[in-house]
Image (cartoon, rainbow, N blue to C red; front, side, top):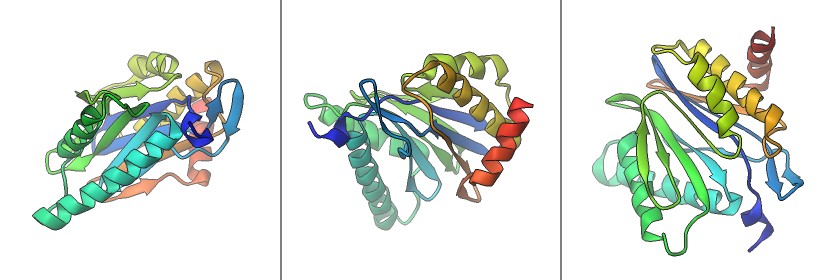
Length: 211
């Protein structure tokens, strides 16, 4: 197993808000007790309005992100329309299930916005896919993140409220989980855009959360 494939440990979060989805992760990757990377990428855009977060082996996650990007593009070319979030989750689920005897060591979130509105799915290494109605967290820091998410989530959050909640939950995980840390990456997906929160805006939201 290569070094890239053994990097693991993380916290990833998906939050459904009124007009879209927040996908958020921290940036630390570990190899046992060693911090192997402080800039690990854990959110990938796989379609126009769909993102995928990754927890587990970095090499496996990167390979799956490449596969999903190609398959989602092919779907659009062949059918003349963008793939739905549910269909993307099913496609990923089927691929993982077909490889269950030589599994990818990952736990994934697929979230985005399509004609039916915002949605997020949790997909495990054996290919099980579950639609989450509001909040979801994966990775080694997820127990700490869930404590914050379940306490503070409410239906019809605004975009600002959802971003602040994601940051608050990630900070809780980063304080208690040694495999989570270094920084925060936030992606906002609405019917109009797939965008990444800038470092400047992230600092503003973080200041509001800690005030």
